[in-house]
Length: 359
Image (tube, rainbow, N blue to C red; front, top):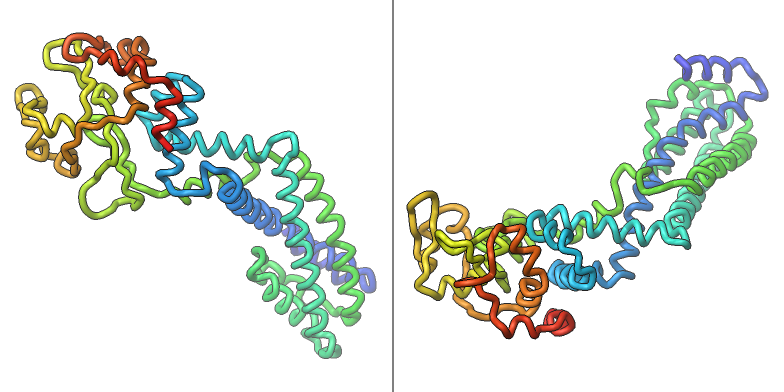
């Protein structure tokens, strides 16, 4: 109803109708332009961070190393807990935190990126106005001159922002013959629109985005989210829903999968890949025991993993277990004694030695 009234008003204004027409058209451009700017800026932020920040300019494996280094430097057990128990949530939180730091620093990169994108789109719209005017100015005399101008204008902007031609049918029959004046009127009407958006962007934050920059950045690191049933490490295959077995380069102490030695409070420090080379067994349900060497016989999810015999363990997890011994004992309601005694050699591993091995 409001649009109908505005169109009727324009048709009754005579010479001033061109100015009102331009204002009305800019009001229709506004929402699509705002959305396009935020969408494009989100992509720009993700691309810039991919190229400028080491954590994000490599593979998922590289990102994983950066995360482990970050966790060790922070020495915050609560963050380790989230990383171990909810790796997908931790990864999203990790990227989101980096995006906030990058965009909302003292230099206010977010405002800069939004204004840069606004300038690009503003120039595209001005170009569309000029092109449309050039195309139809030789058709002066046609009773469809405005309809033709609008056809060309929407076509030019089609790949730039959303401006449905159907939203403009109410003004396509206006009798406007001074097409050059229309060109100038559009240029003048666009300036306040640009200024309003610049004022809005000066106070923008990341909640303004329909699709968050961190979500776009997260999509650059796809991969399997399945966790080893013994140690809860995430499958290293970079293809979601991949064919074949899940696998890992390095397994972790099984205490991280909540394993204890049967009928004891001894936490398990062995890694899955050494267990499958041993004569040990693990329990399924109340009374079913499976040799680690035949772990696939335990059914799903064990049968979907390829765990190769390997007794080597990263220094990182030896340092972690030793460093956070008390917190792990409290979390998993057990003790690192008996069969779960932490070797003396683990206590001598420094954080720097653990980090150096990750390189």
